[in-house]
Length: 587
Ligand SMILES: [Zn+2]
Image (cartoon, rainbow, N blue to C red; front, side):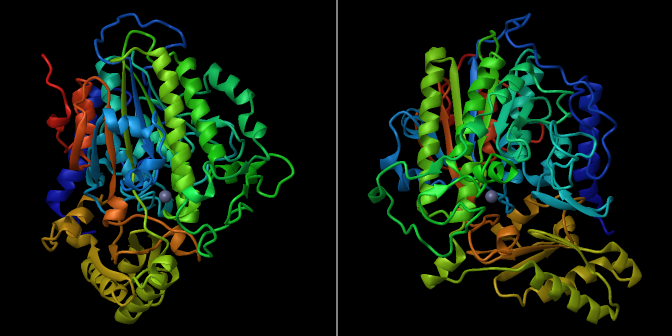
C-alpha cells in the first residue's frame, strides 16, 4: 500500500488517539474499534438508560424537554415546494412556517443513507466519520460487508447475523450531537427509531438506543450492542403484533387522483413482491398470512410508516421521554420515502403519496406532543439524508443523457485492462461497492505492480464506459493530487482510506450504478448532483428565529442543533452554527 504519511496521521492515528482520549476520560460508551479491527468482546458499559418512569437524580436542564429529530430518507428539498399546496396545516408546512428553514446542501459525493445519516448526526464528512458508503470491502477481512456490520453482536429475535446486516455503530468514528447530549447529562435518554437498521443506528450514535424493523419477525428489534434484551415496553409493543394486524391492507391514494399530476402507470416503475406498479397496491406480497415476504413488502408502503410512527409514540411513553426533568431526544428516520422512491421514482404517484402520508404522520405526532408539552419545551429538527435521481429511462424519454451502469461492465472493463497490461490472468476485481472499485491486493502483489499504476490503468479503462465521466485513484485521493474542482472536494470528503476503493467513479448526471443499476426499473441516488444533495433543513422551537435562510452546508445542521441545545459540538464536526437561525441568548 502506498499510503500518504500525512493522511495516515490525519485519518487513522489522529482518530485513534482522539478515541483513546475519550475512553480514558471515562466515555466508555465510545467503541475504540477502527475498520476491520474486531471489537474487543461484548460492548463495554454504556451508561444504561434509566428504567422507564424513573426520575433522574439530578434535574439540571433549563433546555427543552424533548428534542425530536426527523430524518426523511430520500427526500429532496423540492418536495416541499412541488407539493407544498397539498401539505397539511399542522405538519411539515407548520414546521416551515414557524421555524427556521433552509435548503441543506451535502458537500460530499456519496449521498447514500449511511453517509447522509452519519453527516447529519456528526456534522462531519465521511473522511472523518468513516461512514462513506452503505457497504464496503473490508481490506483486513478480505470480504464485502455492510458498513455497520458488527460480528460481535446479535440482532435480537433474528437468525444468525449476515454480512449484509447493519448491527452496531462500531464503525462510526467520533461523537454525534446526541452522544454529546448524553455526555452533558447522563440522565438524558436518546432513542432512535427507523425501519432500516442503519438509519436508527447512526442517529442513535454510540450512546443512544436504536430500534429498527425486522423483516424476519415483523417486530421492532435492536442488537445486543445495546444490551442483552429489549426493554419491557418493547416486548409489550411487539406483543401487540401491529404488522400482523395490518395484514391485507391495500395501499391507495390519500387524495383524489386529480391531485397527482404525473403518470401513474409508467413501465419504468418496479414491481416488488406483488405490490404492482399502479394504485391500488396490495401489500400482502401474495401471501395468505403474515410472514417474511409480507414484512419486507410493507417497508415500501405506508403500512411501514404507520408501524414505525406507532413505535416512536410507544417509545415516548415507554421511556417517559421529556417527562423526567432533563432533555431527552427522540430520532425518527423515516424509511418509506426512500424505499417507495427507489421503486417508483421521485415523480411517481406512489412517491408523492408517501410524502403526503409522511406529512400527515408528522402532523399527528406534533398534535400528540403538544398535548404533552408546553410551548418552549419541544424542539423539532427536520432534514433528509439525500435526494434521488429521476428514473433514467424516463429522463431518456425527455431526451436527456441518462442510464444505468451495470456492475458487470465495470468489472469486465477493469479485468480486461489489467489482465492485458500486466499479462496476468486472474480475479483482479475484489469487489464493487458504489462508488468504489476494489482491486485485489493479491493480484497486485502477484504482478509485482506499482499500486498507483494499477489504479491508473483501471481508471483510464473505465472512462470508456458511457456515463462514467471521471475517476479518482486511491493514491490520488490519499495524496490530495486532485484537480481544483467542486467534484474533487466532494469526492475527497467521501473517501476514508481503509474503507475506500482503488478507484472512485464519477458518473454523469442522471447515471448511477449499484443495486438499482442492476435492475431495469426504479431509480437511485449517490451522486454529487443537486437532485441528490439538496434536502430540507428545518428547525422549530424556542431557540430558533423563524424565516427562510437560503442554501446552507448540511454539515452546519449538527453544529446548529448542538448550539441550540447548548451542547459541545460533536468531536469531528466541521460545520458552524448558523447564528442567524438562532435567537440571541444570555450565557
Ligand atoms: Zn436509497
